[in-house]
Length: 370
Ligand SMILES: Cc1cc2nc3c(=O)[nH]c(=O)nc-3n(C[C@H](O)[C@H](O)[C@H](O)COP(=O)(O)O)c2cc1C
Image (cartoon, rainbow, N blue to C red; front, side):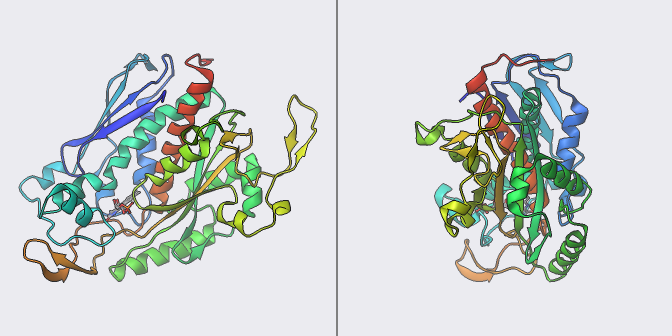
């Protein structure tokens, strides 16, 4: 692995720390852009009160000199603005929330109070991933690669978008969807669906319930040859899907047509190879989503993922008090109602980190700093 990162820290502790190792020297970076990335993750309709408390403060304490990476590990600290409010007010979590890490984590690590599990399982950690992803995006940009995301569904409401086949194939469609998504409070490029999704989130909030959804993340400008067919763990599809699946709450990941490919005959799934006029043959469809045999094939990389509804319900499901084994409602505390748009931004970071790693494997540290 050429590019790797580790994070540490809890949701309501002093902050989240990340170390990103393997960034080549000389990549221009800016704190302002980095803060903007954090804001894109934080700001999304359906997020809870926490999103308004955090202010995208970030400290980069290593690996940068005069606005460029130095080749040394990049070290990042994102303070938790909510931490001071938490001191002395931290409540135990005796009633594990169905769908959260609480119960399995408490049994595994030997706690009765699930708080230590809840604190680290919290998606607050994904702020650090977005920060690391920013650096990966800057590296990829030098290679002409851009990353985009948008939301296609929240609960039962689906966006009306160009056919999936076209979205995967046309860079201009991918770009315009992402541009439209940037203006939508739920990151959905379809304005009608956006309003319906927002009403649905309002209703779910009123009912003390939560919502999940589907998002798509895409990379354009990816050269042929990232990843390899020779071993399972070198396959780019293995690496991309694992990276997106690692986002808390993601329960399914598809590349290209995904599950739909299982339903159609081969003639409607595979992308024909045509002579073209350039150095390599061309395709006029991209149902494969840019990866064949575990190797990027030069087309747009296209990933779709499903996020389950948030596990913390204000009208809680049934649970058990782990301190006395009595039946009780699950723990409830301030929480998001829907975070699909934020998860899409986290997926951009995970895709960027994965592609940057594969890019460095293929092309080494010699990037064009143009
Ligand atoms: C951006 C984002 C925000 C999230 N916010 C919350 C939240 O406020 N409350 C909550 O219970 N779960 C939230 N989740 C989901 C949980 O972190 C996740 O369901 C939990 O860690 C269990 O992991 P699993 O769903 O992958 O099994 C969020 C997930 C993401 C990606």
